[in-house]
Image (cartoon, rainbow, N blue to C red; front, side):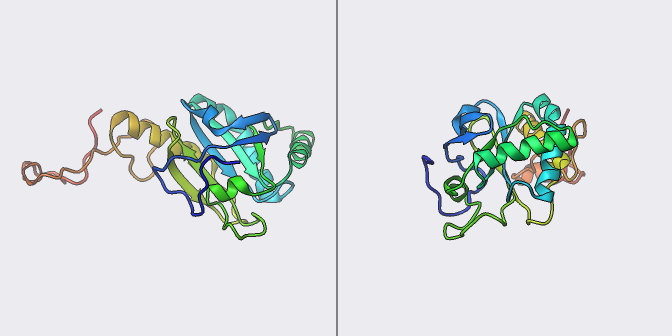
Length: 208
């Protein structure tokens, strides 16, 4: 059961509802991830083509997520035994071992608490949601993809890295930002600062 029932989609900068659930790596509580970044994502169903492509890609990039201090945690309404059978098949057929935990949510309690699906929905077939949660347990980014389009693992890595860099430097990440590129400083809110220079006052690289 979740500690905080939400009947609407979560919003950025809200606390992520805590929960305890069975996973393919034993019981997990969301608050166990405090102090680390977390990419918490749902998939429509086990043994489906797009989800399989995502899980193979995530497993292959696990070391890259580890390198930036970000954990991975999956969820679907399928049972724990379905998850285990699917992961074994992925290993046997594709030579890829999925190390990160996958939550079973057959009652859809967690999915509904996160607003991944409407509370009245009979299943979660249309859900492909991702929540990036910071070390304080706050939702920092949210994405939804349709059932027939897979997420970009490269973009998820970039997103988490950009959030970390923006927090660290007190700046913002521009379009397409990648590690090593300049960040942007906040635009001034005082007219004196705006009039003091000839440069574009609203678009300035942050000092490095």
